[in-house]
Image 1 (cartoon, one colour):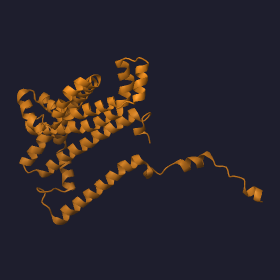
Image 2 (image 1 turned 120 degrees about the horizontal axis):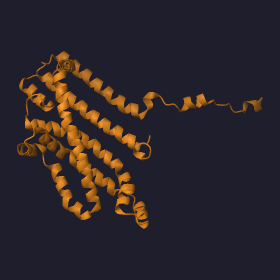
Image 3 (image 1 turned 30 degrees about the horizontal axis):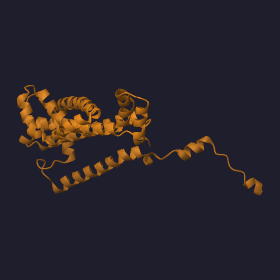
Image 4 (image 1 turned 90 degrees about the vertical axis):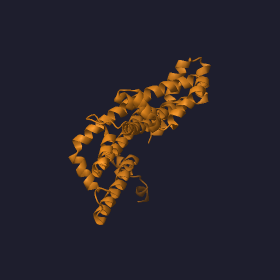
Length: 283
């Protein structure tokens, strides 16, 4: 009888899989999505309750329900403005990535060049865009080009800074190994520095994507352009002049959601490129 009690029980593959399977809510990715959504839902519910109980006038603070109704009613107008702002955002973001990566490669190849020009890159970052935008709009006659340049200047520095940091952050032992095997500058750049710089580069993309959107909106505010091809910044200004506060909040909501989606897109791109080999994206 005691010998029979000592016989281990067989565990089936299905039982193993069930033991290893985590609950859906225990997944870090699901927690990263559901936790902010739950907090946001509670805040919206509290906002709606306060507006209803205190009878706040809609021209002061509109309720979430009023903002949603305005968003649906003015969807055609606001969505067209969003497309205009997104065009400036994507143009500025692409230009910032191309220029930023090229400048970072030049800085890594020459310490003297980096010491001479990097302070001017910092100068672009610390100079308020609202001070430069009027000059650019005066000098450049085409509104789209002027707005794109303003947004590019705002989004450029994170690409340069993070890419330079990543290209410099190589393991000294690997760099010595490449030099011992007489690798050229191009081989060191392509086979060692660029793979090592990818995590920092994607971190720069996350920051720069949001700054491109902010730069586009700020440039539109400064430009104050009107007409049919106007962005969300003009709709916000116009709604403020008309005291159409629900439309103002609806435009702000579209800008906020767009910024979150741009950040999520950069996170997904980073995970797709790094999840198979870099520890920063491994679960």
